[in-house]
Each structure stands twice: as C-alpha cells, then as structure tokens.
Image (cartoon, rainbow, N blue to C red):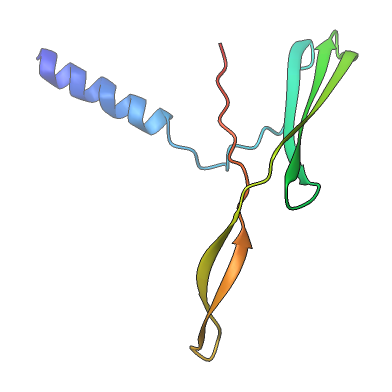
Length: 105
C-alpha cells in the first residue's frame, strides 16, 4: 500500500512539474516582488557587456531600479555545418553566447 501511494504521489508531482505554457510569466504580483532581467551585448571581438537590471516593487509601484553593467570576455565562434534547401552543406562560424543559470533562495 505504501508503494502504491508513493507511486501515485510521484506521478502527481511529475504531472505538476510539466511546463506547457513556455514558462513565461503573464501577470506579476507587484505587491512585494523583485523583477530581474539579464542580458548580454557584444562590444567587440574581445569584450561582452553583462547587464543585470532589477525592479523592486512594493504596493504595486516600483520603489527602486538597480542596473549593473560588467565587462566579461567574449566567447569564441563555433564552427557549425549548415545545410541549405538544396542539400548543399557549408561550414559557418556562429558566435557563441553565454547561458544563464539562476539560483533563487
């Protein structure tokens, strides 16, 4: 009986974790929240700007906006093989971009 209940709870947890909406927040509760935006902008072959912007909300109003800009090394290009509509394959250098990992505590 315990195993059946554990399997049932695991199944519910798995279904609840499925993301069908694309993960986009449509309506932000602005009574007490912090909105964070992360972006990058390539300056040149050597440098990329890492831009972090935060809006702090209280009682449905922005009470503070914080923006930080840092310079980080640009990533090298990667060689990728592309196939056109005619089936011809060619090599192209595609610029790499930083990936964002967010940890919330």
